[in-house]
Length: 165
Length: 298
Image (cartoon, rainbow over all chains, first blue to last red; front, side, top):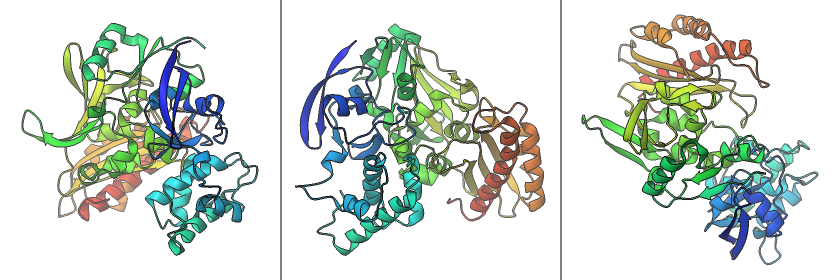
């Protein structure tokens, strides 16, 4: 096994970790950095449960080798809430029952953050298309879409309290 | 899990030197959207991985001239699908690629990370961009120890997973002529969900004169044959014709019969793909024609 020493900035903290050169990022986040909020589902890039933000863009962390992320910034679901307060998108998922079993939720939220950053006032079709790479096997899509629409709405009404980064 | 040597060259020269030494023992890794799932599943077990993501010069999109002074848009192999969707030069001059890149399956995550060079190198019959590059008469630029070589996209795809690139060469960029005036393009595909696999797709570029007569046509199919299928016979029928309902009905039938050996997989069998190819070709021509008449904007 070839070990590589890499440096990541995860949720604002510099982390140094030795990784197997073939290991996808999701395994390093979960098993070596203890950030188990990011799920691994399929390891084939289909389900989107492992979605994180790499240099600010939503990516599937099972389709990126940890080695390829050397020197880059990563945001996981653990970095979304601040000072114990849920992010407006998290709060909207809570309030609109945007999850059932919860397995897909972290990935859904990480993708939702990108949708809202790109489209401050998304319509339903925009949200549904943007979620094309995130599967919910409970089929709870309607409530997830409702939650993201509501999060956009909260942000419009209360920009100071609802900044979507 | 077999061992693999991971290399991340910092310069093009280093990357080319590594490829010259390793040849086909190295798998080139760019955005990883095709390669990493294959590694995860054990379907690919190279001795070396050559991660070229640091070669940022290969991500550039530029507007320039060829040696023969023809204007050309050059798209670096590392340009991501998300960049191609948004880039002003592509949106204005090669709108077919922006439209197709925005329809790439797997969600925004795949578009953010996947690259045009990766999608082309995979030579997956279901992928969208190869047929577009063939319809655009794009040129694939490769560099190796022997220098730089340019191959038309139509000759680049040899079979599923097989391309004209030699093991010691790096796919650098694609060169495309900017869309001419009075032209329009469209990429239309059938898929069962927004993020799903391509069942059949059609890429079309048309030039339509003010009198409504089609002066030039290019049409290529994705998802139905082992390589992108250029429909020269259909193009010949369109050229010099007025695009009417009758023309469109005829071309759907002609596109259908141009597909000799449709591919089959768990998503759709060959007969269905062939039938849908005709419908997609018709829609692509109809949209490209309308766009040509309205000034070319998608």
